[in-house]
Amino acid sequence: MTNMTIYKRFACIITAAALSLSLCACDLVGDEPKPNATPQQSAEPNVPDVPESEVPESSEPTPEETPTETPDIVEPSDTPTEEPTPTPSADIPPETTPEVTTPPAIETSAFHLTGDAILTETDDMGMEYVDKMVFLGDSTTYGMKYYAVLTDGKNTQQVWTPSNGTLTLSYQGFAAIVYPKDGSEIPIRDAVTDALPEYMVITLGVNGVSFMEEDYFKSEYTDLVTDIQAISPDTKIILQSIFPVASNYEYLSSINNEKIAAANAWILEVAENTGVAFLNTASALVGEDGWLPQSYQNGDGLHLNEIGFGVVLSYIRTHGYQ
Figure 1 (tube, rainbow, N blue to C red):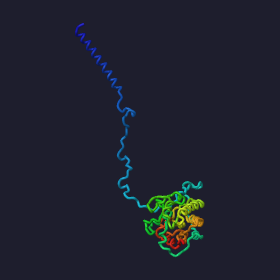
Figure 2: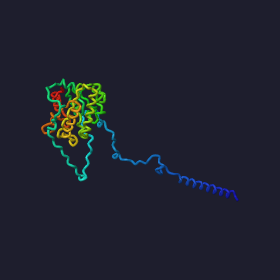
Figure 3: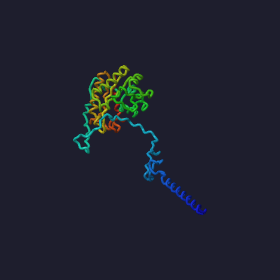
Figure 4: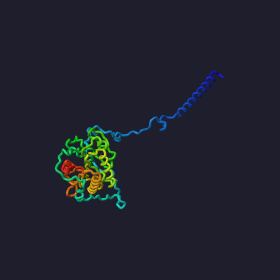
């Protein structure tokens, strides 16, 4: 074998080995997984692009939408919360709304009560007499402060109500009032213990007529009166009648003059049974048509305005405790 033949065979072997290595490398490259080939292998979720026109606006208020002032405090309301939501009768198709009727006016005589506890007409005892009184009650009492009808106006310390401006009769046993002497919120009994008022006028029950039966109503009222008597025996207690409502009051189905007149008779009975006085201011507030006159109310049909409170104060002064 010549040198040339040996050289050719060696060259062929080298070439074949190189070709074999190249084919193996191609197979390895072909088996390598590609990046992001499946969702499970993706480092981040594949989020589709969203056009700017479809991006929702931020719900964060703009400076213009953020209130810069505290809203004025409005006169509290005695809207009954216990009234159940009416449900349509089975005989009425679902799309039919039952007709709402306004209770008729009652005879004004229903507000003219008789009894030994009722304060009768006297000479005008003046504002000096009123200045000696503490007024405990609901939002119909808070209005005396709201309209600044007492001697010290809106700075009066004569009005006792909870911080929300109203007191429901059924809460009297545990509710706290804002004690004007120091601004603290304390139970009614604690306030009486500290103040020992000469006169206390209590006006409660307008909320109660919407859900309280007679026995429950009188029991709560009696409990309050007898506790005050025990704490401060020298306090002259006057139970004031609930004021009538006007014909435009929104919740006449729950609070109306028929219920109010009945409750006033219950309050008079409590006064007679506990030996305290009864002030029948409602008789001066009811109009000839059986409603609170429009000129006496603040627009909601329930709360008095400044004119209405003028009638109340005049009645108090001319039906003095003697």
